[in-house]
Length: 289
Image (cartoon, rainbow, N blue to C red; front, side, top):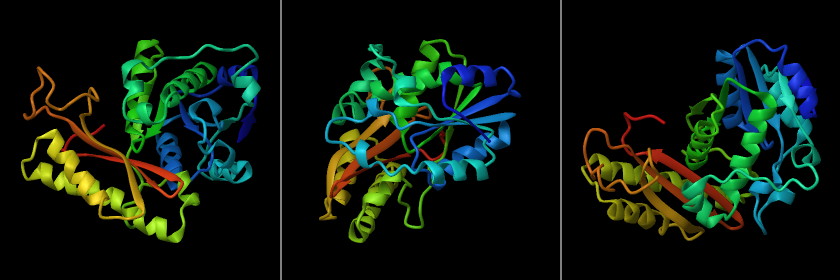
């Protein structure tokens, strides 16, 4: 497994790689969810590149950049075991040269949900992913479905900037209690980890309501809130039900609030102590990302 630290070397190595080339972007702090991305890429690609870059521009003030649980040697070992061919591990100055103030604005989708609660976060994501795409020139790029809004931002960015890269979503990996795996689980106390089960439970309750015929957005969101409110250690940032194709209301004009082509997604962000967790599920089980 080759470790590459500069864009110039990455471009040189890329010219010799066997196609198709897959990229798995990571911040570090790898867990079984990341491993699922790496293994999926390995099954399909001729060459697998993983990036290892703790991107500062997607962290806001008072967020967890300084304590993010990345461990370079452990992360590299996980990548090596998964059959990664090359790791792109640039420095901050390599990715953000002096006087670099160029950004990729994701547009309106970057201002809602995660964008509203973490101002600038999705702009930071779209900018760094664009830079990674330019440096590695993949044919395929793999992302976890837990970050549903991020996937949609990346899809729109890749399409709008004519990258010609296939964005491949991989299902969320969950623990035995349904909790979506996250690097931030390292921050949870034992009690908070038990309490965090309420996130997935709230989403499942909304899906039960959907399958029983409920189509009103507000009612479905109230179902999620009611479940989260049963857990004293949970503080809800948002509960949202959106059309997965637009991230707009499921009843917006021209689409209707019901019908065979409706693609509804329920999303939650909640805090447990100082730890913020996000999750989502499709309400219509037969529709995939």
